[in-house]
Length: 454
Image: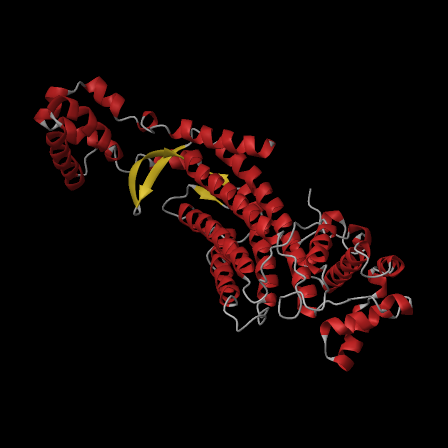
């Protein structure tokens, strides 16, 4: 499914479908092709509206091929003119009919061209990142469905709280991942309206009376939506929203990385990252099975938000059209986010779940994890507050004397009077006290599978 939507006709020799990555979107060759595509869309829009001759637009379009714009020639020209866009125009014009070249970049200003190129790069990046998240979603669906009945301790503040299933835990990762997909789709809808052709101070001066119509038609030709009417160049809030969305996504995966690091602790041993049969955990401690992917996710969750802060700061600019200082950070944050998602794929796809260890850990408190259940049962017999106070005493007795909850409960006269041994045995089975964890998880799975099908 992965494909960059624009200019594939020109880029097939450069980027094969199987190799499309966010890093490809920011390669000089791809950026140069997008630059030509934007200029062609401008010329064609102006031609359709009778602003420039149709023959000139056709000539410009026929030479909009990367073979006419080598980076080597651009670099040489840039040394002379010291202007990134003029250098490209000068090199490109060498291949365009002289009369037609008079209409290239007609009435436009540099920042509008580069802004629109950046919009197209981010649009393509979002498409690829959503594809990555959809692939991860498939792995999380499998992980969740495979562990619907994998019983484990639910923990709060590092302590055993109540029984849950591992599927219930991973269903939260699954739902959060889907929200991240929807966040990117929402930002995409704004990016698609961010193509721009508004002139040097954003008032369309130099573009003629049909400038607004030219801008609209130009963006449609580029596969974008009708552009926003305001001049956003010096504001850049949509780019900031994109960067902040990537920061949120990074924290989602940082949370997963942190959780898997903890679950792989020697004392827990409930999950294990698969690193291959010949992997070495430590050069000097052969027994160690160090998690690597989880640590990488944590590191990405620190880097990406820092980059997003720089993009956010670029919203504060002077007067009408200062700005665009964070373009490098937008490139970097997009590429690093893809690296994070690529790192998470094998981790989640091949995660080893130690179901036996999870079930064993559920018994670490000798039944005390079910004290709430016994409290609720006794509340119907002796009253809620009385039962609650009584069970605190029972739990304290169990802790201080290293007794199981069953042993401590049976030493309490009130408990013995209000519950049979068989009922107590029933109550102290953690596999029958997981609430609606399975039903809840199934609802999440069905909801996401429905969205994937649509």
